[in-house]
Length: 110
Length: 117
Image (cartoon, chains in turn cyan, red):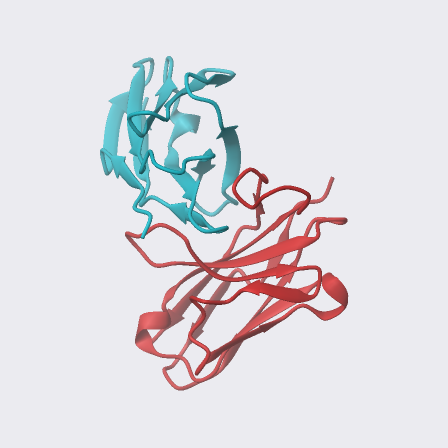
């Protein structure tokens, strides 16, 4: 059974701080890794779909890296803002279905 | 482009009652998914449709849950009868369905928060 793990479970930072969190997944038979941002009372929003080892993707102040050989991905937020407060989910496909981690809940205080 | 629509947004029922959720995917998306997200856990796939056919319902508790996608567009998910452990957020998502599930971006609706008392 594919197991996707995220850490930390929650994170509290001050506005302006940069932060990062981790998604771990089995490296065997890897072919994709998804990142989503889920703000309270809103729809989960797709951030990135990553497929290549060493891939780095960026969207504004958010970026992600991928290491498929060791089975992890990092999500970075530069200069966190209160509007970045959300739960960040990663997911990797098992046998043709996405398996989600439990998420990292980020709170950014002004 | 309109996103994935879901209704209702919130529902409170007593155990043993029935409940139904509705989802309207993004126009042109062939694949539709229903997920259950229990507090403290990641979303878990309940059922996946490709057009109006079921691709995967291996994690759907079929003794109480049912889902249909009429004409390959809208979908409804029903729980009958509900149990306390069904309290969760039910998310609907859709994707173009042109690639493998693992690389297809899924677009989510806002979810229905169900509380079973």
